[in-house]
Image (cartoon, rainbow, N blue to C red; front, side, top):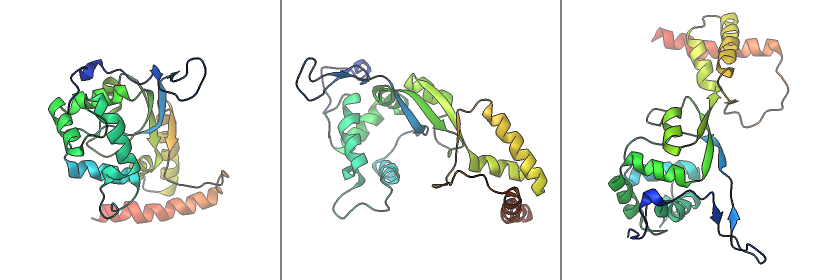
Length: 225
């Protein structure tokens, strides 16, 4: 059910006073500054049905299937979405998922994204570049969220692009250094998928051997097709 008292456009972000428990002066209210999302992706373009929406919830939950008798709307992420997102679109918290998605379709993808992003209280996004198609660009995200967006360069796609134009190990290493230097002129940070690193630089000979193996596995088979 839609709330009749407030238009969604009048619902402000939670960067002002918000509830806080505890005794003393000012009890019940705290003031939050704009937040920084340190690992962002673009928003999904277009409308989402309940199945595709659950696919994104499943990715956030990191599991392949919801427990028996539940859906991913019952996961921690799903419960958070149901609690905090519907009020930003003028609905009651924990409304039925189908009603929430219907409201998103009623408002349209862009307006819904704008209301949700601006209502999240995030002022700065560190946006990972090189993401899959169908997501908003840094400029589109900044406009919709009315915030600042800083690019984080993913190293794996960068290395793949360099490898496509590098026929030898020497060329690959040299071109990678140039690509990193060029990217560093506008990127805020670099990111990669390695979960653990001992923080020690590898031996240059090890780098060359690894580059040779990787080029043999990725570049040459692609050129043979």
